[in-house]
Each structure stands twice: as C-alpha cells, then as structure tokens.
Length: 82
Image (tube, rainbow, N blue to C red; front, side, top):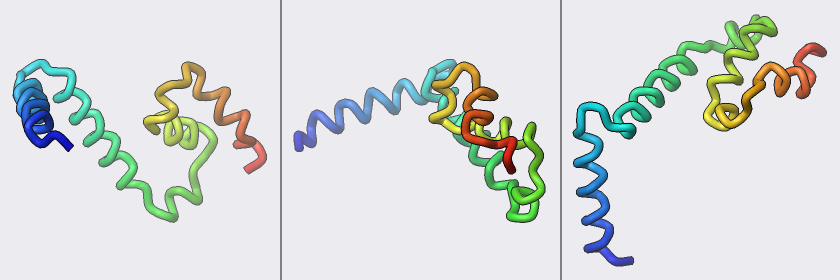
C-alpha cells in the first residue's frame, strides 16, 4: 500500500469534510439520523409494526435508496402476508 498516497487522500477528504456545505458533511449527518432512527426500534416495537411502519423502516435502508418505488419492493417481498 502506498502510505503517502493514502495520507494525501485522507488530508483531502478531511478538508472537504470540514467545509460548511460539503456533501460529506451531509452524508455523515444523514447516517447519524438513520442510525438514531433504527436504534429506537425495540423488539416489542418491531413485532407490533404495521405495514406502513415497515415501508418506512425498509425505505430508510441505504440499499433501498436505490429503489424509486419502495412500496412496490415491500409488497413484492410479501409484507401483506405478515
């Protein structure tokens, strides 16, 4: 591994991260918000979740951000059978 190249890119990333309106800052804030959202779900709350709750829960997952119609994806998985 080229340590000098790594240090160069880390320095560049940290500079962008420190910028007030950087995309990286927005991404980190979004991750923190998502993390807080999922941490508030207890076992009891998960077991009592309704279909709409499940759609929101799944819709916030990073991988689901790629899907434009998240409701279709949850129905496709058989949510209605639960």
